[in-house]
Image (cartoon, rainbow, N blue to C red):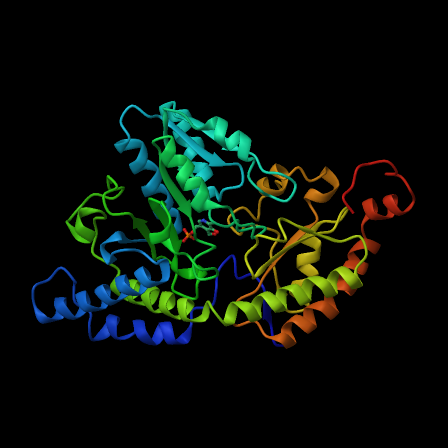
Length: 400
Ligand code: PLP
């Protein structure tokens, strides 16, 4: 059975061309890029090229604005902790209620341990930020605004360019977690006021355990990891040269694919959604269907257990997810869907299908033909669904 992978927001397949670009940096150009000899210079060349490749993907003004890290989580933490350390007299952070745990868990921790005030701005039923609450939360004590560019569960895109301006008007720094947005939509940082941005290699067909923090020139920074003078003193530790080279190659390929490949992916996602909504009754899309990543669909099946749907899909050779991979395994409903105010009967029955530029039209056809039967079987075995069919929940609010 050919397996179909529709969980690309959890991680992507490393592009074989990325692996090929990395391999020489394990065996031939294995030098430490801080070394003065030829081996070091060869490794440093690879790192310099990768920095330029990332600069191009981000539309950053200078290659020195890129700092390599171990991934999205480290970049998020470095940005948040640095802003709190460098913004004298300011001890509040504004964020959204739907950020990734990489942001929310850290903020929850420092709220308790350091007495930092955290404003978690809510979202509406489509996952869009509450603009009025956002404005009200900004003030002379705001050190940092950290709002994701695009949500990992629903794909909803936030208006980060405007939010960055508003943060600056209040004298605060602006950070965005662009781990899901990078490589899927154009990011032209030089045209925005964004101060810091996080991205991760494994979400854009690069290797795992490597990422980057964009740090606008002139923004004060305190390193999270102190050590040697690597990364201009902004991140200690010998550089992961093969990982950096792989991230650079992945960024270049993602950048080149932006114009064409993503139009095709959007078309496939829209076709899948249309077909599923047509073939399956009582199903809807969670999230903002206008401002949304082109690869993501989050589908709600009220009264059902999303995990049961996923097990059936997996048996049929289709990999999907119930939300964020980092929180799956917990029985807690998604904090994103809860923040969107989904009714309790809808919270457990959501599944996320996330495509990539490798997804084919045939795969989408197969999913569209297999999923309706799976939903029928799961409904037949769902006591809640049967009770609903018998009219037990008449009058219970539902979006279906
Ligand atoms: N931020 C978002 C929005 C994500 O989706 C993820 C990964 O799931 C991360 C951060 C964490 O990135 P990494 O796995 O590189 O630490």
